[in-house]
Length: 233
Image 1 (cartoon, one colour):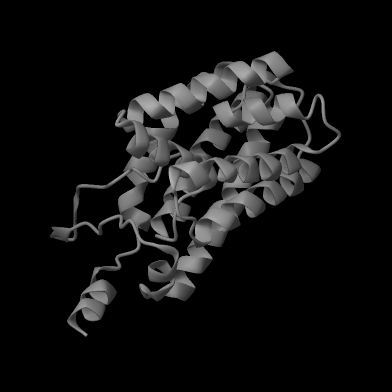
Image 2: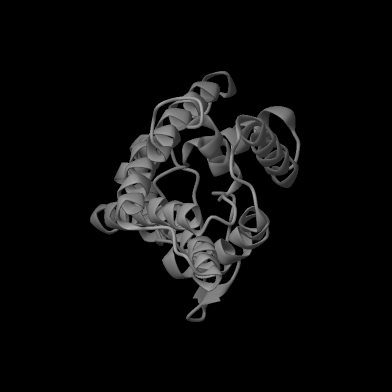
């Protein structure tokens, strides 16, 4: 998942909305706030649910979730709690990178983990392989959809995406290289801790970007009119 996704398409004969890089105050003043907060909340809830689907599928987790699943082998916390804890650990790394959190940053750190635990309480591990595959594929697809929703709300970056963009700015390395380096690192640490890796990990790595990119134009909230009005005033 990455806020660096920027749709460059034409929607209804007009340029697509632009993904803006706004500070926390500007995010709240940019307009259409009820819609954007609702979209953010739904996106984060679905993101947590998608994580749980991949867990119950048992065919491998997303890279960061490999780390989370490894962590809970050694610390008496749930998977969702591990997501929350690691989110705030990652936020500490924002400080030397001089990243500025937004509304979505804190919401992401809390809501995704809670939604994951709630969904895990409702889902059981299926017995049939086809059902495991369905949960894995559905989890990846839902995560891509949820990513487009929450990033499209234009309320800031999640903790892990902010780490990626912060390292990109500080090192001058490409987003692709930084993201790859981060995800390989967390998978290796997760593996060392006993985390769950499988075909789902590969499917996620290959599919999440294209899915989010394809869906982003549908859910990116257009803030251009409100931004233009503020500048004119």
